[in-house]
Amino acid sequence: MTIEDDIAFFERVPTLNAFGRPALRILAIGAESRFLQGGEVLFHAGDQADSAYVIQEGSFGLLPQRAQSDDQEIVAVRGVLLGELAMLTPTTRLATATALEPSTVIRISRGLFLKMLEGYPETALKLRDALADRADQWAREMKNVRAGLQTKGAK
Image (cartoon, rainbow, N blue to C red):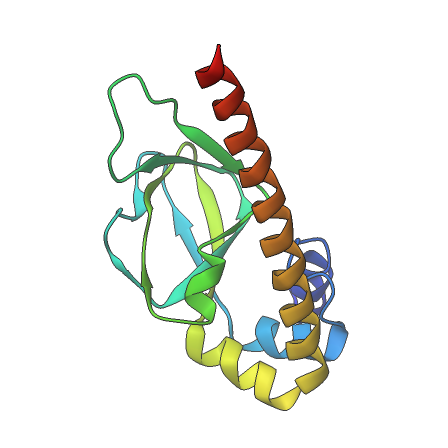
């Protein structure tokens, strides 16, 4: 794929799609592609994370670190950004990601992402606003879950 193809692909990825072509060009130039066979592990739960991965082709099964035998594997497909928080801060992987078929990912390292944000401060503001909106949404969802649990407990 060309740089322009990668930029066009990034424009369709949630979180990255608001950044604008100049910022995405930096990511496309510095990002690394990786091919995995079906059954190959991309990362393990508990691993230190220094990058995010965008699924370019194929799909991945995600199992949380403390998966129970009856837990269902979450399937992530083309265009999903895995481990986005790792682009901003040191963290650990919360799940093991295993390729379910021959798959390709694009790795965006924390260093590359932070340099891009330094060069495009307006992109950093867009990211901050998007993260704030998501945090508000999560808080509302948690409030609804809490209210539902309290209602069940009262019966």
